[in-house]
Length: 262
Image (cartoon, rainbow, N blue to C red; front, side):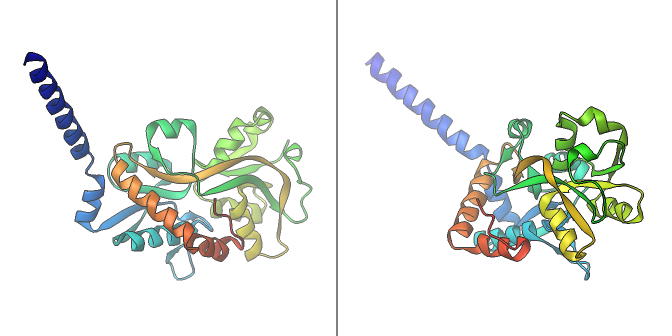
């Protein structure tokens, strides 16, 4: 009888633990209760997210977030944030997700829940069409623009040749600011995401060129708070469905001119 009583107690304890653990994560129910997903964005990252001529927030990541919201039956509120403090914004519940070409790293995997990568981007050198810069080896002695707290910045600082160029790096708050200085001659090149570079080239045909080699490649994903597994699962399932029905591929064609969906 004692053994049977002990078994019953253990089963009860395990059942209680299971119930409590399931009740802890209310991340999805909170989103449902407020009927919206608050998306933290960097509006300086075309074609992922940027302000168009009508001052509207547009881009691939914006369209994907909207499509996920529609699939989940919730509104999407776009929240442009200080991208240098993006992790702090997420931790302070000022955004439910970070969703603008967010590079997946080992450290970020420890700190947050990250979605499966949905796209890979190379970090390339953008220069004027008549520039002698064609590769990383040509950057010695030149002024190089970078947007702070981006995959491009991380790739450059981790590059084996970083010591040879670090004194010539100039950081900016946006790729637009860096490209404007490139146009004026204040700097000689900009290191940035390859699809962002292509966007500038398409807008200004014949004005720029892109390097033959790259500083590295990054995989991009969506960042969630570590505790928000239930919400994460819902978004992940919605993205899976958007890939399966062709929506993600159509949006990729719209913004990148090719199907890049992984």
